[in-house]
Length: 242
Ligand SMILES: [Zn+2]
Image (cartoon, rainbow, N blue to C red; front, side, top):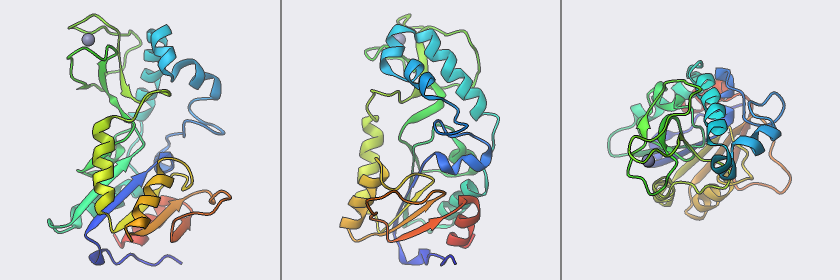
């Protein structure tokens, strides 16, 4: 039984989404059974070290991910979140923080999206000192391009293992969380970073905290007050009454 949230009670809503929300769209999670990246690939290509050692290999690997992402469409869970944001009166705040790099929230119609792990549809220079701004790029190519300003290899604008979360994304997330009175995590484990940290901050502020996830919570308990286990495509429309 899912109790519809009385959205009118809340003024500052923060939502965190993880890979689980994109799975019903047909996008495989990065890891786990049937995952897009097996452990060997992750070690070989999705790290800062790999970018230094084999930038063309990292480019090809991320290019494959870009191709996969651009084959799928937002699902009912994405649309429910878009409808939620777009139905709020203008004095209410809504921030959607996503760990996904697939842009499916924006495609569904969400406007205030913080891309915590970057976007696969942006390209940037691998040289941190270069002034080239990350730019929108949905083009798929196995040829690694080079920077027009400094000739360094270009790369996809996603966080590799060993890299920090962009400071802009961190700032926007923490400032939204500090005001939150409702925090909802969807499609992510509630006991790992960042969900576990976010829910702790939200609870400390007295926010209502809700988790929607396919899998049960791991041992060790949770800070979430309400937990719904199951498919976000079915749960979110009911939860939001959209
Ligand atoms: Zn450059």
